[in-house]
Each structure stands twice: as C-alpha cells, then as structure tokens.
Amino acid sequence: MLVAARGRLMQALPAGGVMVAVQASEAEVLSLLEGVEGRVGVAAVNGPEAVVVSGAGAEVGEVAAVLEARGRRVKRLAVSHAFHSPLMEPVLEDFRAVVEGLAFHEPTMPFVSAVTGAVVGAEIAAPGYWVRHVREAVRFADALQALHELGARRFVEVGPDAVLTGLVGQVFEAGVAAVAVLRRDQGDARALMSAVGRLHVAGVSVDWSAVLPGGRRVELPTYAFQHERYWLDAPAGAGDVTAVGLGATGHPLLGAVVELAGSDRMVFSGRVSLASQGWLADHAVYGTVVVPGAALVELVLRAGDEVGCGR
Image 1 (spheres, rainbow, N blue to C red):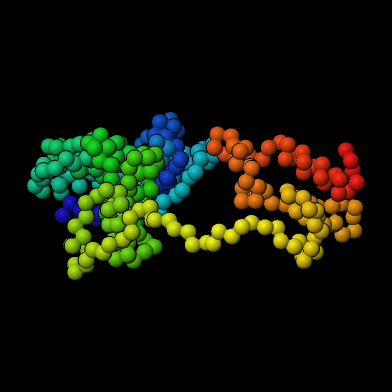
Image 2 (image 1 turned 135 degrees about the vertical axis):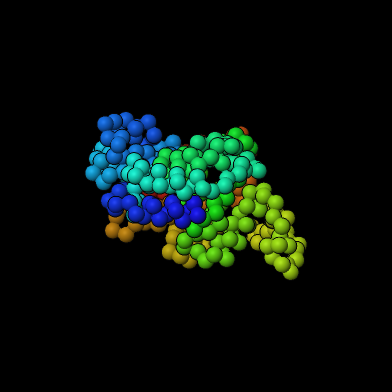
C-alpha cells in the first residue's frame, strides 16, 4: 500500500520537474542554491563529487550551466518528475495520511538508512520517517560509509542494472568489492551467475550445491600453473648473412652490413646476447646484465674501419 500510494501521488504532480547529476560536492551545490531553496534542492549525494540536483527546470538549468562553465560533468536524468525536491511537498500530507494507517516494525537486523545515512531503529517504524523518505535527499554515500564502519567490505546491488555499483568505487578507492546481480546489457541468468562467481572470488561463501544442482567438483591445476618449456635450446649463430643480401663483417658483435640504396650510408647490425657472448654475464649491475662501455666503443671503431674512417 505504501509503494502504491507513493507512486500514485508522485505521478499526480504536475510535470516539468528536472533532475541532473553533476560532478560537484554537496557543499558546492548548496552554495549555488542560495535564494532558490523553495524551487530546487539536493536530491542525492552519491559520492564525494557525485550529486543529483532536482527541482524546477529553470533553476536546475542555471545550476547545471554554472557547473558546466567550471568544467564539470553534467548529465540530465530521464525522469518524469523532480523527485526528492521541494516540488514533492504538495503530496506529503496526503502520503502521511496513508502511512499513518499502516503498521511498522523495527528491523531485526542492522539497517542503514539512505535518509539519515546511519543505522536506524525505532524511527523507521514512525510514519514521519517515510514522509521524509519522499522529500529529503538520498544520502547514499553516507550510508555506504556507515556500512563500512559496521565491517561491510562486499556490496551487492539487487536491482535492474549496475547504477549503484559504479558509485561504490567513487566512495571507496580500494578494499571493497561491489557486484550487481543484474545488468541491462546481459541476460538475467548470465548476469546472476557472473555475480555469484565474482562474489565467490571476493571471498563470499557460496552454497554451490544450491546454485548448480547436480554439479560436481573437478580437480584443476593449482595457481600459478606449473610452467614447462618445450623449446629446443639450439646454439645461437649468425649464419650466412650474404644469403639475404647483406655483407659479412667477420666481427663478433657487428654481424652484417648493408649499403642504403642511392646514398653513401651504411647500416651495421648484430646481435648481443648472453647466448652468444657469455662474457656479458660478468657485467651485471644489481642483477641486471648491461653492455659495457668498452663494447659500445668497439662497435663504433669497427664501423668506422669498415667505411674508411680511422677516427
């Protein structure tokens, strides 16, 4: 009855309200609402710089324009009314009359409210709480922090898409896992199984016999997989470079030379490797083998000799 009454009353309100998600802090947005609090307000605080502004179209547009001019991201939401804004106030008393006829009970488990951003108890059983639920901002970021303080490190979004899952990463940079049960771009079965798998990897205990009735466990290689090489260890060799149009130098480091067509330039090439120059192993710095400076000078001297430049 509560859900039906809330939806009916909201839809009966005049159209024209607007909701816009902006990249800004709550304090910055509130500073832009001075003087127009009766027409626009903060509808949600989803992260340190993720706020939803809701209210009359003209006023919300002015706030969005200022933030856009400051280089902030602004996105208009596809909604029918300006929820959680002053435009909801005409239905509050009618909604209160409905919820006062309902029986509420305190939660039997810790319940974090997005209205207060904290754990609630007896107040959730009062009709006034549900009236606030319609009008006041959704304090999603505060609710996440409260859950984190209670020890929660894994969050599961039960809904039609992964909208809230992405917001968790804006509140916590690391140390938590957020998984959406369903996704708009995936089939329900695939999305659900993927979510269960991700939760399992994140350390959540899963009753696999219930998830996959009739399934059985099979042995898999341990991680990391045992690495085995099957390549033949053939000795390194330069081979006959003249077969591919190059000239041989007879030098252990510069193995081939070629003259660039239409010019007086020469290109020397070679291979420097521990496989062919074992003495390189003696030139290691903090465990890393480096080519000694003397070898580099030798490369230059030999190239010079090949083209008739003695120095």
